[in-house]
Image 1: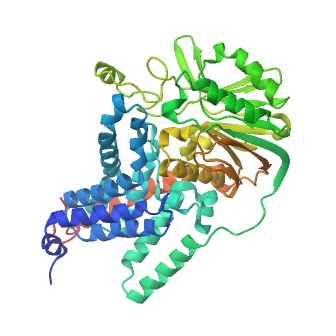
Image 2: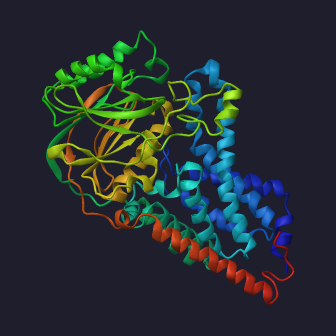
Image 3: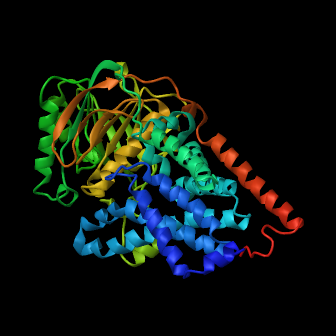
Amino acid sequence: MISRAARFSAPPRWWYLVLALIFGACGALSHAPFEFAPAILLTLVAGFGLVRRTDRTRDAWWLGWALGTGYFGLTLTWITEPFQVDVATTGWMAPFAAVLLAALLGVFWAGALAFARWVGGHPVALVFAWTGAEMLRAYLFTGFPWATPPQALVNALAGQGLAWFGPHGMMLGLLGLAAMIAAVPLLWMRGAVLCVALASILMPPLAGPSPLTEHTVRLVQPNAPQDEKWLPENIPVFVNRQIEYTAAGDVPGLVIWPETALPYLVENAQVVFDVIAEAARGAPVVLGIQRREAQDYFNSLVVLDSAGQVTQTYDKHHLVPFGEYMPFEWFFRHINVGGLAARVEGSYAAGPGPRLLDFGALGKALPLICYEAVFAHDVGGTATRPSFLMQLTNDAWFGKRSGPQQHLAQARMRAIEQGLPMVRAANTGISAVIDPRGRITAFLGLNTAGYLDAALPMAGAPTLYSRTGDVPWIILTLIGLIGVIVTRARRRAVGGIDAGAPDA
């Protein structure tokens, strides 16, 4: 009988790396703009198959790295867009950013497959190791959980499981399903498992009306391209456009402008605030703006009352690395590279953390500025449960294709996880009202200017995930990882993991 090691070495090893890259890229088809959710299963099942194809830890590492690099490389093609805003200065960085980010994120998946091979290659080991890798990706170095595999389920009935298990519990479930598909020995049984899996992934959420409040929210979408937004001759155009949209139609209960909607600092904007308040005709206005405190600058939002006075302020606390602040700033300052989104000297300062804004009869809102909606653990970070989530974002940075669509999918995940509606004002789109089940009840399309009046959906009951957060899944994953390590040690003590096969 030919050993697995012999089977692995028969074809050239580069062939398996290419195959892993292809299977990884297939998983990207599960995300916007393609949104073919079953494709994520192909990538995950391939991961289990690749571990079985080798008995060497270092080979598993490279195969996992290729799988992850293919997946993130195609999913995150939009990452080149921020570098195109000022092509003359930063355009040269775009291909390096795309390749390096995919390669770096691929390391997480490489570690998962290598660990699973190191402890013996059992599918259970990979289930826990891969989940642990995604947890690390969500938290390590401020985190970057964009395009986590459960994101592919947001349009499906299975995606409603986010309310119970959150993204990491859903990752465990997806990997368990993939392990079953990969491990079932009989073809007809594997087909039956696959059919059940596809049914849950393809079936849309159960239909039904979204209970609505009597309050109307207006979302303002000026559609200011990032390369034009800060030009002196264009500033009046975009500011006046937002004022006109605020003054139009009936008076809503709340007006929301997007992130950095005004190109001024708070302390220099009172004259404009007065004009905005007059246009709002008594409705409170939330808008994104920068502010300065001593030597620190903040990416903030403010709430204006009927007199144009700032009554509440929120400072973004989860900043974008290499966008709003520079890790290893001393090095990048030396080579004259600064944060892409920072419009001030140096980096932004981080705010103190999540807080609620009080809108009286509308209830309390948890504000999220752009990137903050990517982090499930941040959205559940307040002691008091809000009435709704409110995101202000400038997705012009993400381009005109997949980036804004993927960002919207993550906003929908947060609504499902918390059982709360979300109102989302985006500069270039997609502005949307989302119900507690993640369904879009009203929206303004990408790359269009306008405003949207929509009823605020009612909050749902607190979800299990909103009560527990990630802690149970982190504990379960750690127990699983410790368990497979202990099992490995015992097996080595009685004769090795796989007799005659190297594990490194």
